[in-house]
Length: 406
Ligand SMILES: [Zn+2]
Ligand SMILES: [Zn+2]
Image 1 (cartoon, rainbow, N blue to C red):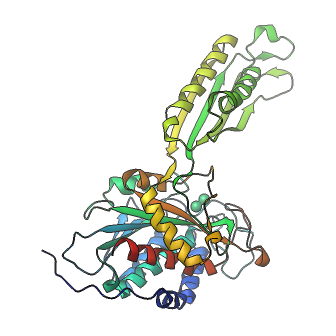
Image 2 (cartoon, helix red, strand yellow; image 1 turned 135 degrees about the vertical axis):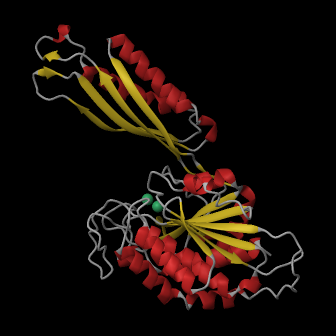
Image 3 (tube, protein in one colour; image 1 turned 180 degrees about the vertical axis):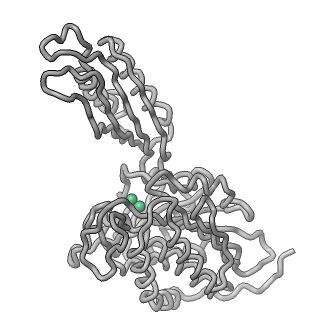
């Protein structure tokens, strides 16, 4: 049995905005604190401590050490006689192995590690959303779970968090999340139904030829020649095998072979990555790559070892939850042009695992401001974003909660 409280009047959006705007100094302070102490995937100890300390201070129930450094906070809304809904909000916590080149007062204090993707902002937004909701528990019905997830940049913290049960007890009905996005200007929000980000697959290939004298190729199997044929043939997968209506990428990023100009290389190594949107292609690329590699190696008398990893599936947004997010975004940016549907990217994200498990929507929060030199791309040593976007992120989450849970 649920206790039945009379629903309160919906709060005026202007009031929500002004209350959230008042949190902006705290948002900036939190983000800068996190920015100075970046940590790599599954090593987010200080980050987790900072989050847990704040949640404890605000008396928000939470569980720590999920999938090593992950945290889930729970905010119970108004109780009603109706079936309660649970909305999850996901924020990733990790940084990157990059030496920060920005000269700012909040520059990274950890040598060789930097929040160069904006996940410091994601944690600040999610934390202040938790705070705001905990102060306004009567404004929504049901439950909000805030998921602080480690290791998005790899090897991936979403899957182990799901396996640890973060989407159950109570069962999560939908999930939302955002990425601060320097590919979009401040004041815009990228919202798209269906595929938003690509699947990420990786391969390592080792070609075993037969080395020998550079002047006596007839006694050898030249692994460089074999690997070169493979690099060229792999380009035909997207050009000739994938439906041209689909988007896909096959990139060979590393090619290592040889020790001297007059030595035919015994072995050659290639590494690469594959990206695509359509979940129907999940089995296709690995098969096609293996067929090409096997065929070329056999025709030249070489052998091979192929390691293939399906790291993240594509990020696919649910149409209904996306409609909800889009309507909130349209209200918030106050001009339909501020909501950008053309925001697909071949970048990947392990938010995809959450979106495979429950319907949801991942969206981009425009954060670039070239006038303030805040427009470097993600993963750049000079990456930084316009912190004005932080309060917009909180407002997006809070208003999605109120729309979903009422
Ligand atoms: Zn990133
Ligand atoms: Zn990121």
